[in-house]
Length: 482
Image: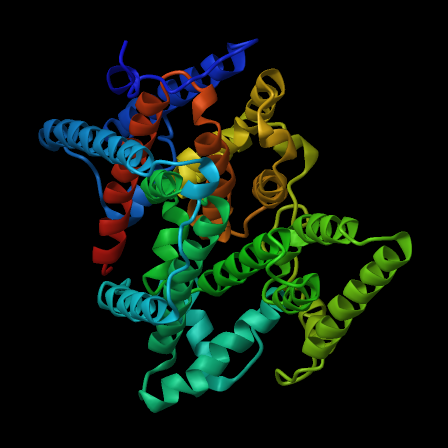
């Protein structure tokens, strides 16, 4: 069969065991089809996957009369996704030469990045969420009187407060609008930096194109960019900065000392940022291995630790009414740390973790935040099994290990930590994590496409389900005014 005729169904070049590739493709096709069905017939499962609380909040029920329209929409999205995939193939075939010659995706000039950033700011601000979501009104009240907020948000809250006292004051914005402006500015910056991350992960333009087609699945992160009045847009920005910095260190384009300095600062944005510690340790140790001798390696480790600790202590000395240590002591004394949790701990009990209800709520959460990304992340061990069977270079792919050390701690954290109001109402607590499960899962999926039978079909179904998810969740949020 000619390559052009069979390329949609299969790019696979197998030798040896095939079962991991077939299993991955089968799981993706079945899970994506189930996801599409549950979007159109959400009552097929009680409670429906990730949308019971969301549909109640936004009143975005799908009527029986509208379901034929959504079936047609699914078909259209599948055809578009198929065309997107074929266009990526055309990009690969239209650039003759070796792989090394085809990896010359040029860096975008700074002036173009500035134009993209300004455009993103205008678009996100124009279509921002019209009301205060999450703890927006409570945060705005604290901003207006300068009081402390949560012990978990030290530098993140300082950034919000700084924007309010500078840009917000110049533009005569009330605290809530200033909070939304911070979210928009952070979201626009994430858009620009995400492009840089994608360029670092995929040097070939066809792979970059394929990954962009999967991005709509990460609804949890995307909705934060539209003026979401919470801390999480700032948190997501910190994560993207660190992932980008770690990738630059792996490519030997940035000194690991800069990575240590940035880590020491950004870990204090939000207490959950310590989830990035495994990725930091991996990156620093890998950079140390490049040193010529043992003495140089020891000196490099000590120097990085000194930079990490010193930047952290410098940040802790900044004043936010009081220094950070005293700030946290006051919060602990007022019992804000455990307020609302059932067990006096921020983590679920073992009995709860093993219950069927918790597993169902966990699936609900990720079906809303990033169904495709977490599915591909959970298939990660199979990708490694496939690479081992086929002699695939993934086993030596340091970027895959780095992204795994970001994604898996995120999923484990979301499974074990007890949200104050439960998954349905406190779902945004884990919303930004969806971008990083998609980075890892999408990277593994696209890098391993030649080992997957029916990759084009799997990709098209996966991308179409992601677009359907975004179209059914984002507009109700942006139009919600109650």
